[in-house]
Length: 263
Image (cartoon, rainbow, N blue to C red; front, side, top):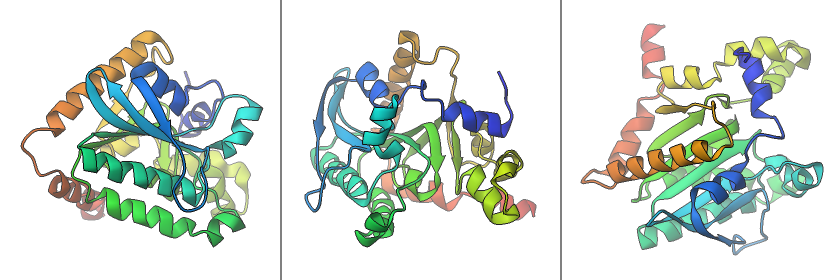
């Protein structure tokens, strides 16, 4: 398997790769999906609801891409609108009210940047998620399962623990976008990908994530069973006598410190 940064990006975009709903259906029981942001509309790119992680009730939220061309068009290719982020926040606040841990699955090239989304407050919706997630008093685990593009991904990733699949990527911008800005040539995306340090190994070395999940058995029953057990163990650890909000604050304040010192 290729291990170059841009090769990872291509693997993360594979339409056959498990999507958020695949993880939900294979890891959790009794998933009940909730709809709408109570302001404007329901966003099919953002799926969320309540479920059980074995015997533990949880709130699950996922950015959904779909597999087929029809599904991807319906899900806006996994690019959430502002109402998607507001729906996610509504469910997270509900989870806090009832003491449920929150598990997020992230897979987006970025939040939708159309005129309509901007008119309806895309930037504000994401910013509100960042602010509110930092103060939630229940455990939050976010897993990057494919693409992790910019604020669109971060809007579900202000968490106590952030994990990445082995071939996921996480960056402030896509390699094509970076190459277009720096060299006016999207064809240099492979060069940009290496410079952006967007792989799971890069993210872990920088302290951006805590765990890299192997893809050796991707999509198989054993794969989902393994993630289920890891989630159960992590939630147990986070449910102890610890100050979640302070730890979350400290976690994000430390990001980038080592890089600055080295320079």
